[in-house]
Length: 230
Image (tube, rainbow, N blue to C red; front, side, top):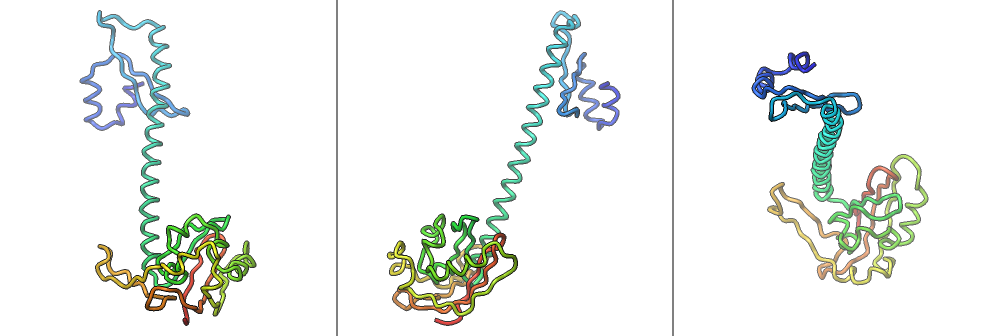
């Protein structure tokens, strides 16, 4: 059996099998597919293995096949995790570079993404926003408008929404007076400038009233805000 299989192998692998000079080659099979061979020689005295020994090795080769397959699946999963992390980082860099406020929430309305521009518009820092519900962060009137289109398809626009500091939830009082003023920094990172306008603030770092145009798409795309006047 090994001779038949080895004919399709590269010359270097066939040479390795020949050099090992093993007597038994037992297939390591997973779901009917041979993924490896377990090679065994004769005993130290040069005797052939007994039928009991061979049966034991056949059982062992099955476990070896499962272990190899699990290792391959784990490596594949690791690669997918790494790819997802790179995609996430790439997406976050894009979101940060856009000069409009962007947020993304899960199906329970808990914030998963909250970019720097949105920090400037609301006065709520990202670390305080992520994990909270929209009702804890935004004016009730705005949350109600989002709720009206929940479950609907397409993009919905909210034009000239007045964001007033006094309408912000009382659960976030400190953010309204201590939000940092962030300016453009052309050498912020190795990926180029990330210009951030000081939207929704006066020169002393306190929020002021802003007029927003909001694009909202339920389920699969983040909400985006742009400030039209303040």
